[in-house]
Image (cartoon, rainbow, N blue to C red; front, side, top):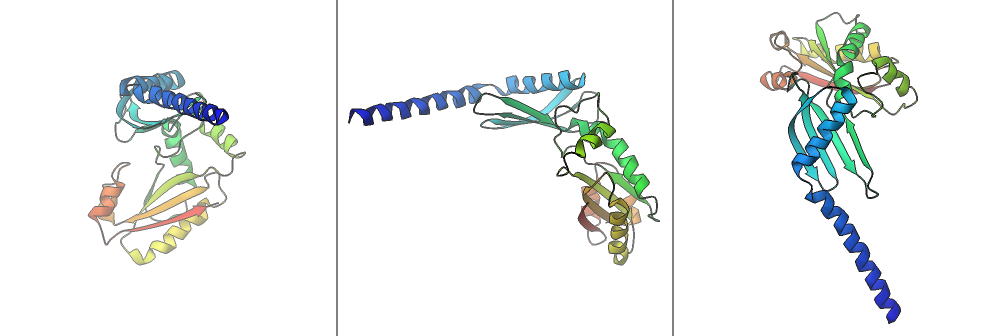
Length: 226
């Protein structure tokens, strides 16, 4: 009986200690977590960021922000803060994607030089969370070198074609996939076909809007390209 009482007491102590840890995390204000993450970004990239929103769930927090002075839509940054049970805190962010975005788009555009119709390449830079070794001192070449040892990591790239005849969509999409196959940019390629009327209005941030506006005149074809 005494042994049972001791075990129950120990079990209760574990629960209380766990509850205290969880309570400490949850008692922190949104402002303190936000400021901690913003300070991390400042130290990593040597520039200021402006917070938009903070979402919290137990030991996880995700900050949405943008570089101060930048575009609050096109330059959106996601920062994920994870606090583990042993007290370790890990922070990962997507901003390195903004830094390499134009170079990625330029290199993929070069790979697609044989595509005979107007097109644009977009690298959505708020999707992939990068290792903290990738800061403002690193380049796309640094990342591609790292990636050669991490083959499971894949890019997510959108190619928008100007095409009025949807019957030709599959043929042009396959040309895109064939052109990038075997390159350093393996991953998910999404080909979006827009009519010329929509394509001339295309920007980095309005692809989804144009797809809705031209419903029935568009096509979306995706493929994981190795």
